[in-house]
Each structure stands twice: as C-alpha cells, then as structure tokens.
Length: 175
Image (cartoon, rainbow, N blue to C red; front, side):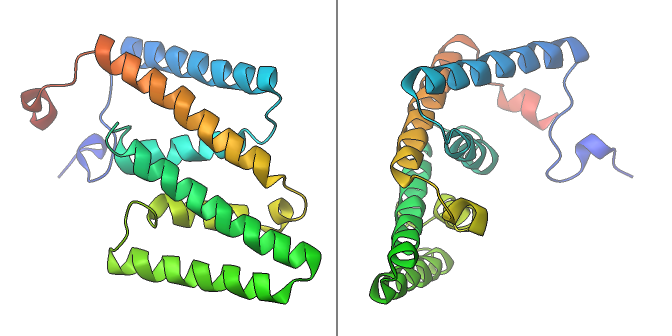
C-alpha cells in the first residue's frame, strides 16, 4: 500500500517550516509581478500567470523549457487574436484562417512536430483566450505584453533562485 505522497504525480511532502518559507517566497514573487504590472500599466496579468502555470506544471520551471512555453503562449495568443479580430470585424475569411491555424496547431501537437511553436502552452492559451468572456473585449496587445513580462519576471526569478538554492540530489529525489 502506498502513501498519498508516494502516489504517481503527487508532489513531495516538505517539512512545514520549509513549506512556509517557500509559500512566503511565492507570495513575494507574485506580489512583485503584480506591482511590476501595475507600474507598467499592464492589466491582463492573468496571461503572465497562465504562462507561469504552463511552465511550472508542465516543465517544473526548467530554464531550457521556457522558450518553448513562451513561444507556444505567444502562438496561441496570436491565433486567438486573429479569431477575435475576425469575429469582431465580421471578417469571415479571417475567422476561417484562424480556425484552420488552430486545427493545424492541434495536428502538429498530436503529431509531435514543430514543438517549439505548437505545444501544450499553445493549446492552453488557445483554450483560455477563446473563452467568450475573454474574447468579448480583451486587448490582445496587452495580453502579449503580459505574457512577455511574465516570462521575463518569472524566468529571472527562477534563474536567480537556481543560483542560490542547490538542486536536489538524485539520491534524495529517489529515496
């Protein structure tokens, strides 16, 4: 019988003191991003947090995976922008082109091709940014800025932390 922490996909349990320190660090990083966004007048900060989620959940904040997560996010946002613009202006050809691009992206993800551009991050952003409540009036220029700002902020923070905090040893990770 396995314990809940030992089950597949479950995060490792941390000592409560260490978990509290990590939680405090997360609060500081998030507050910093919100303050930076407010200072720069970037309003759809959810897009930066969405990139953080994709990068952290799918790639465990691997610096090597950040470019793909960012490019995928921008690709998904770009396709969503095309769809919104086509729908808002009554441009049927643009709507069809955007939908064809999205179907092509799904095909490339399923086929495992062009993974730098069409990946899980692309699909996440297509899914979220095509929600009717977001499509109604989102300023996609601001979304692109928020995604890029999120990549810069969270990427720098993750890089700095990786220089300060040693990576867990493989012996500790397997025990």
